Image (cartoon, rainbow, N blue to C red; front, side, top):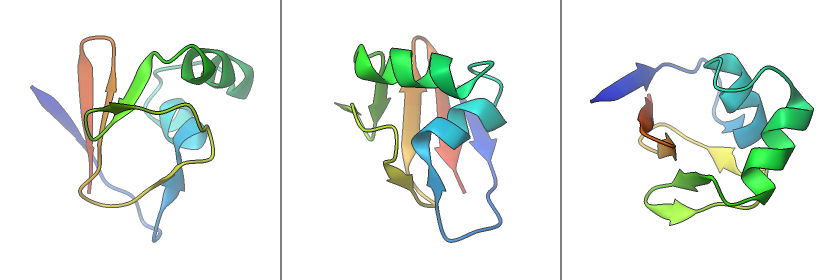
Length: 69
């Protein structure tokens, strides 16, 4: 099951996205889980918290999957 997340801009950075969907409570927490390889984008581990997400990208954290639209 994927949660659809609509963005109103061309892109959103991964750390900001995780805060927006309440997956983390702070930018510091986002930095930690991204650096530990706990987040994947489009099926590949993503270690860059500034990764630009665009509509169509899939973000997975543990058992939750989010689809950027």
